[in-house]
Length: 407
Image (tube, rainbow, N blue to C red; front, side):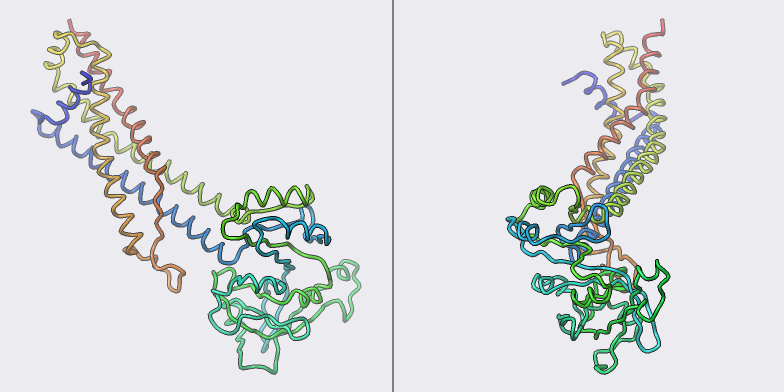
């Protein structure tokens, strides 16, 4: 066994003559363990939130979305559409036309986000599992029905029993407004009836109305144009490979986004928050390591006679330096291992039983989501090693100086 490691283990397991030195060593272990446990739990919560967001996006976002690189709307020709549909792995291709408009009903009005879709959207069963009331259909341009977010449905006081008075939709003619050609045709109007209520997530529920594509084209006065083409992939399809094939077909004039890229800013914000939390907790762990610093410093003073004996037996300054570095590492890592164990157990218990509730009424989840990642444990261990080395290096040098400078 390495001599420095052997001596460090002896110092760690043997009782100190001064009981308060042993007490400080135990406090060092406990403080490191508590910080490690807290760090594992916090990082796991951030992982859970990220996975929850991705799972939530999966309920209403497509696997891939095709957008124009420069303009708000696009229009693919028949050849491009046929080439895209022929790509292996693509199950459905949904043309979409989206824009904001005003709805009015029973002396109430609300600005909503209209999303025009065709029959392929329903064929893909998109959002079918989120229907909480009503029937899953949207009709056509002559008799339009809509899938309405539950927030819109309740705020407007809609009812399935009212089959006489439809909901009015209003949309401004932007070209006429830009030319100040204001007339009775400046505002386009259409009507629809609610067919079903959707409950997905708050932002979606409070502003989304899904309508027939032909009805939407008539409302915005832009037949043939699309806001995007949404691609739904087969079960085992690789989105990166399909994306590369789409870019090859469409060229640089179009942008293809994966589901994560569609919400890149939000997911990036979660990762940045996780990084800053890790740095803050590492800083707190560094402050807690002052107990380790004092524990080693006092141990050096107490072991002066032993250190002289070791010098007489031939121990080198380098070996003595390693001894106290190893001792600091053993003290900290003992606490870190215990902290990781309890952090794992508590995270597992939260994951399985939802012990700590979220505390938000009518939330999509009842308890804080938890997802443990191996790399979080690895980076936590790295942080402990670095902080321990920094906290131990001064007492170790002091031990060498006291031993070999005394004549």
